[in-house]
Length: 236
Image (spheres, rainbow, N blue to C red):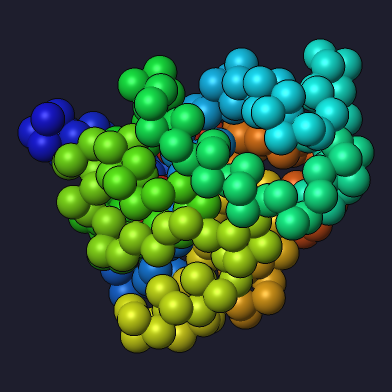
């Protein structure tokens, strides 16, 4: 597995050079990349849609109809909670239930294509990797797989729905990295908001939970439309 990943990463770096983007550690703007998991590295949105209405019935909030999906992808977290009639006091219980449910079905949720090569390219290029997720660390490690998890220097998991900024700050402190040298990469508006609160840059991926237009409205520092663009952008 490690040999395959290294070969993929080498090809990706060669592609960067062909495009005129030389991979030089000394020229990197960001030395720490903090990743979200669900919707960013793991393709969990289809799984979420299959199970969310059972969770809604269990906790007494509004079910999501097919016609609701796209409008909700354009909404912020507070607006989503309001539209689905989810009381804030129920959020910890819902989050705990979802983590337990995901643990039972984690084999159904694959990583997006290109994750292995992208993480290896960043690691080999000198970017330190961290993960901040609302999921359990055990789930995150299983999701990534042993080889990818070994590349991640820090896991700070179990984030509350509005608690990522605090975890970003903790990761920065542990890593000894200045905020100006770190970027958080996620797929939701709340990831952008948390990065801003923590004083770090934010990168938004367009293949996750939130609609690309909703992400761009909030002005992320970088927008990635393909997995390969993450390594290309951070290593250039």
